[in-house]
Structure formats: C-alpha cells, structure tokens
Length: 458
Image 1: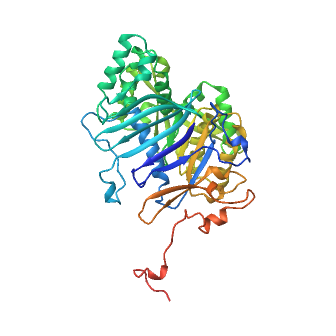
Image 2: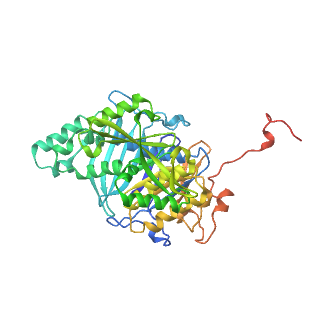
Image 3: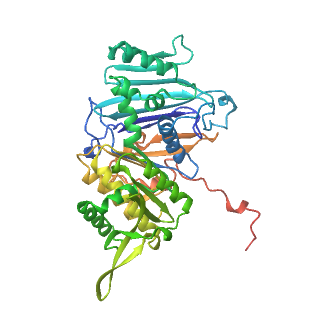
C-alpha cells in the first residue's frame, strides 16, 4: 500500500508537495480503509482531478520515475534522465527529492532519495512506527562515512557478510541507487539479513503497477485462460457484466506467417524464449493495434495463438470469432481492466492509472470503482486514478480524503490539495461546485472576443 508520496523540484512541481493516502477524520465508509499494519491504515482509493496540464500526469510520472530508478537503474557514465522545475531560475542548481511511505509485508517504510542529473546525493530507508523509526540505512555523499550501515551490519553476524555489504555500498556508482545495486549484485545470495531492503524492492517490483493512457495491462493473465477454466469463466462473467455483447473469449492457434508483427521481432522473441531455462516462463505476450498474440515454444518451434472474442450468431448454435481489433476501443479497454480488477481483488497491489476513463462510458468507470470498493472490503489493495470524469465527484462513491485536486499557481508550479481541507457536509453534492471552480482545479477559459484570428460572423 502507498501511505504517502512527496516530490520536489521535478517536472511541474517546484516546492515539496505531498500526496497522502492516510485517512482523515471522517468516519463514513470505513471499509475504504485498509486493515491496520502496526497501527497504520491507508485509503484504498484516491482520484486526482485537475485541468489539462495541471500536473496530474506529472505526479504519476514522478512515482513511476522512482520505480524505474529502483528497478532499472542508470547506466554507468550516463546522466540521470529527468527534468527539474524549469520556470524558476533559483531551482536550476537545487537538488530534486522523492520519497515513498509504503506498507508491505507487515511493515511500514519510508524510502527516498535526493538527486540531480549527475548523482544521488542522499538515500535512506527507515522502518517507520507510530512512536519511533528504525534506520535501515542512510546515504549522504557529504558525510565522512557516505553510508550508515550500522543496522545491516548488526543483523549480519558473519565477517564475510559484513564485508560484502560494505563492498556493495562502496561500489555503488554515484548515479545509482543503493537499492538498485542490492537488486542487481546478487546480495541476497551472499547476505542473510537484508529482509527490509528486499521487502521494499519487492513492493516496487510486484505491488506497484503504473498504467499510462496507451498502456495495456497484464495480458499474461489472458494467457492462463487456455489452462484455467475458472479464470475463463470469471473473465467471461465480467464481459457479460459490463454489457460488451461478447459471449466468450478464446485463444486461436494461427500460422506463424500470418502474424502482423515484423519477423525480426518474432525471431528475437523466439531466441529469448529458447534461452529461458525454466519451462514455466517460456511464453511471451505481444500486442499490436488492439490484437494480442501469445507466443510459446514447443519442440524448438514458435507457436502463436491469437486472443479472440466469441459472439453468438442469430439462427445458429455456433459462435463467430472476432479479432479483438474488430472490437471497439471501449470494449478493448474493458478487456484490459478485467485482469486488473481480478488482481486488485487478490490483494497486495497498488494500481495507479492515468486517464482511466479514456474510451469508457462514465457509468462504467463509476461502477469499476464501486465494484472494487464493495468486493474488496477485506482486501488490502489500492486503486489510484487521475481523471477528468466529474461524475466521480460524489460523496456517494468517495470519501472527502479520497478526492484530490491538482492546480497550477501563477508561476506554473503544480500544487496538491484534498477535498478534506474544505468544510463540506457529507451529503453535499460537490460536482457542481467543482465545475464552478470552487476547488480551483478547472481550466480558466479566456474571452473568446479576443480571438482576433477567427473570422467575424456578426
């Protein structure tokens, strides 16, 4: 679970801004709060509203940037690729800062780093509690000892383990996070007590899932449909529930030559699959123009299946099979969100989605959130959205502390504030006030009479 995120001097954010999933004082909709972990619970959903270019997507990009830096790192002798806030010359030489407060594997953590395009100047990981915090490690390039590893060294009793930890820390490049170095240098195999670091890495790798408007989610789940009848039934029930007009889905084996993917790419995938040691992972998923292909290896040959939909034919008991590229954008969007919803309800997932409403009817996006909240009462997962869909702005669906606004100030800097900051009754209809500009997160449209380049029709 994401408890809180802060960002400073990154893209459209100048001074430090906080995005918090900590519940406010409201007592309504208690099922929207997660089960407490060491006294701390988090909200299961949040929706970010704001005008175009207000900074909603930039907040998600900041969260995604940190994830990529942890999991992918930065190549040696290359710059850390990001943009500082560019509309204030005073910030040109100031460092940027990102911090995550998360909940994972029964603990609460604060992990963050200070950085610029050339180096990581600070990095820290704490286990956080209500009364006190435990420092797992700290890094500060201006300190006499760059790394404070006391906690890790005390937990690892063997001399060779202590030496290995110090060796990895000392060898961490200036432009690389210590967490990335731990992940890529086989520290787990050589050190016995680094569970907290591994927990945080696992959260970034397996819990945090960020989806931008053109992304597709987890077609790998669709691959399992071939073997799992229960999963197939669940998928088809969702398609019926969302009134797609689709009666079923299937995987159709097709000829290798008919795949609408460049052969160079297919051959590269085949080579990668052949090189994989475990039979369990010798599969790949590829999408092109709303068509999804599943590629597997059998007896050294590449086998291709296409994900297809089935429709009833009037006067015939047979089904007509459709390529998913023949389905509407909205239907394909729904099919992407079905595995997402299934994973949400499994628990221990944080989905952050930019423009979830794209190609979806307002009633569908409303119901997706309501479905998650009603079926996920005993599940610790989160659904965080950036949206323009004002029909979601109702306290029938969301708590006040789940509604966030992003606005730009006079200097073009993005600011975050919550509906919790406003004195609004629980039964107050807030959508009208939002569209009238009470919460400031709407576009300021100018005087059309000043559009001198348009022809005068009077």
